[in-house]
Length: 312
Image (cartoon, rainbow, N blue to C red; front, side):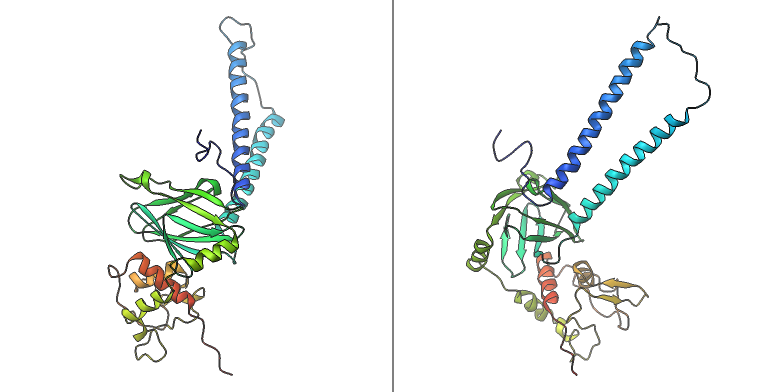
């Protein structure tokens, strides 16, 4: 078999051995159960075959120790797998705070990736070894799935909703990136690679690339005149955006919402869905005017706005 396509992919991320351990344990348990079932099927087929003198009388009453055994043992085994799987799942979906942010926009049939400094790539993602990388992903058309077999990383990428995933590559190298969800005629061509570099080489790559500064988001903010409402000097009352990203805000309907990528995107496209308490629902929708990449740029710009300094 070609070394690029292994029957058992490499364990190239920190989480890969843990995912494999659960998978192998489930396989072994299924193998044991299969052997036991086949054994008893064959055993009883021989014992109660036609013409045998086996005792076929129905058992009277119940045998409590046996009933407790087949109830408690599967419960314990099931709970062990549940706790084991849940712990691994939460570790897999909750990215470390120090993770490097990368935005991913999927479309038929390519991956568009943008680093936090604005550097963009298509069908290739450069990351440093030994650092966690958080992916915030959305699709421009249909459902895709970001899949790196060597990292055991697989996450659906949905239109209209942000999903996240993270990984930490262990060593430099190139790793296959696939779309694992059938997304159209040329689905099989929607592939790329993750290039893992030494940290120093990664910094050199960033400086030698074609970075597009985060100011693109600011330019969009000004082009669409968002500042006319979202600034302290505006005559129209709208929530200020400095330092708001990551906070929880009270809503006019009595609820609350955390200001994250999904909330900002919804506020841009459907501003009347979750209006901040104390403000009128007067913001127009920008649906159809902004691409997903434009929205990602705006989110990164808003995310970069720090809270104003408090005057003593």
